[in-house]
Length: 199
Image (cartoon, rainbow, N blue to C red; front, top):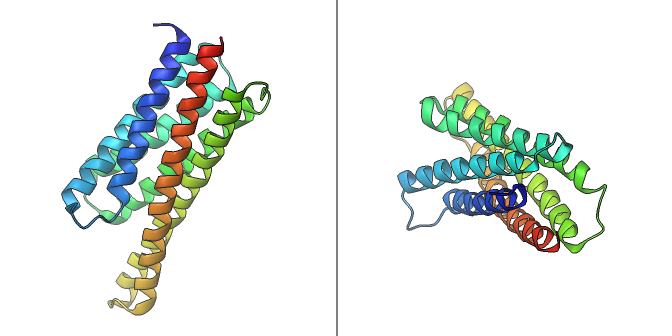
């Protein structure tokens, strides 16, 4: 498979992964907690695989390649937390770290894409990357609110109204961040397809 095709396949897998994880982050009444967990797990596995394939398709060392590698490590960090750890606080901390790594990776890749915005495919990729950076940052912030609520609950031994407010803020930020990231990932995939067609 040629490098360009590998990037397109990787972008498609990453887009499917972000949508899967976004569904898992959304509090649909018909989804059980186990189903949400599975969707988040598989979504992050797919994202990490897609980002790794995109990095592999880059060939030579570039900011975009390094950015995709950092994003893959971010997804792997989230997956490790979900699979290996029982303690919710540590899982949340790893999820925050993973989302921040994904945002950092997106920023690195964006730096490379900004150098060449000569075709419409690059414009899609630039907008998609910006959306993913925003989405990942919102998810990290949302998990930060959740972590703070957990710590307050442990410290006070009660579940007061401010904890509930933090939980609600965290959930809202997480849901919106997930869907913004998913939208950005789809735009990046479209940009990758256009770039491949033009080459």
